[in-house]
Amino acid sequence: MKKIDKFIIIILILLIIIGACLISYSFGKKSNTIPNSTPEQQNNKNDSQNKVPEENSFSNKGLETAFQKYKDGQISECTENGSKYYSASENAYDGGGQTFDVNGNAVGEYQGFTGKYTGVSPENCERIYVISPNIWGYPAVNKYNLK
Image (cartoon, one colour):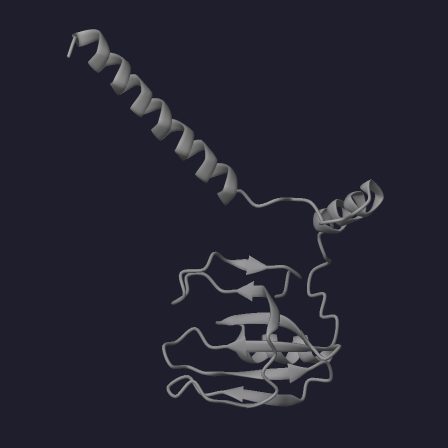
C-alpha cells in the first residue's frame, strides 16, 4: 500500500470517530424545552425557573416538619394520586427516613437497613433540599432557601 493510501485511511477513521463523538454528545444533552409547548408556555417556564423564593418559604407544615427533622439530610417534594408529600432521609448509611403530608403528619417510613417502606411511598419526586457534603455524592440543593 502506498503511503498516501494509508494516510487517507487514517484520516477517514479519525473522521468517523469524531462524528460518532459528536452524535453521542448531542444525544446526551438535555433539552430545555417543554415538549409540545407554545412559545408562551416556554416563556412562563423560564420565568418560574428564574424566581428565587423568599428565605424560609415553608409552603406548608409538611415541608417545615421535614426540614426541622432532616435539615442534615435530604428532602424531596413528591406527588402521589394528586396529593403532595415530602420524603426526607438522613445523611447516614442505613439511616432511613420519613414521608410527611402537607399538614406535617408522618404518613410513611423508610427503614434504611432493610429498605422496607411502610405507609405512603411516593414515586414522583423532585429533590428540593440536599445538605453538602453528603453520602450520596449529590450536589447541594436548596430550592426554597430553607434555613
